[in-house]
Image (cartoon, rainbow, N blue to C red; front, side, top):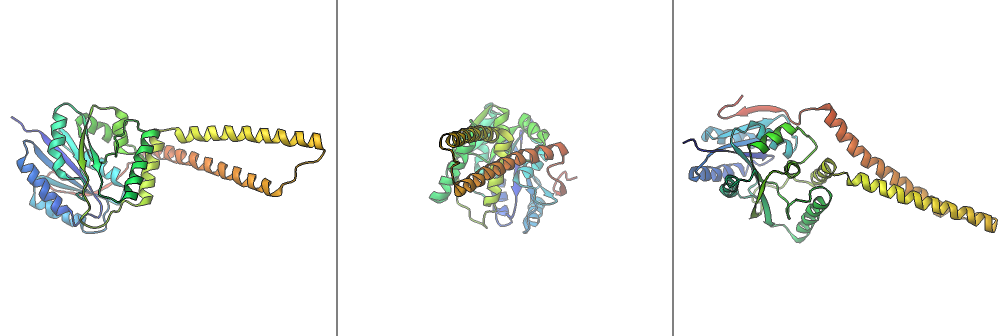
Length: 312
């Protein structure tokens, strides 16, 4: 009887220190599992020795393969590159920094075997400080309200998906998007696997505030028209106020025979409405840029080289 093959996609960015330990833990899981494992390490333009670590792992472990991108395209595109290379009936996405325990894999596979097309690893707790936890909570609650009503509390980055979902994500070819968002949008039968996130032991996170902000904007703009609706409502409300104020000024002039003096208030009004106009143009620009990028239909990533069994 043929054993099920599970692909494990690991996006790698400056993770040279943690990769050997991750590979060792995955190898122990594979040895004890009742399914076969192939591991795809995708180097997303790391500037450290991550690719050298992947080469060493793939030489020592035939089940491991490496994919090296030409530059840093972002974690979402690195995951897409790994999913495109995956040959398993299902594929799991795990982080390289070991904050999401790889020991979740058997539990996710079990949930998939019970009928879930998408198995989402949901954070039950985080090791960060109060401010970071509050910011993360606000972040995911906002995404829940604006874009993904079915987003689990605490969000998720790691998941396991069956072949229908793998094919959907690979064929989607959206560049400015989020793969978790696409999974939620698709509505595949899903199961949740809770876990406790652990503290990072090696190196420092490259997940900067700027990257978090871009990820947030990509998620909202790709799956919600709320900013455009807010802009329309704000424009209508401000126009109504402007018309009412203009009527008041005309009435005051007719009744009292002199206009209202107020250079300061005039300048404040001009500055305020100019700011609103620029903000509105910025929101429109975000949508238009992503529309232009989608129309160009450029591939979201380029592969520089591969290593391991079956490399091209």
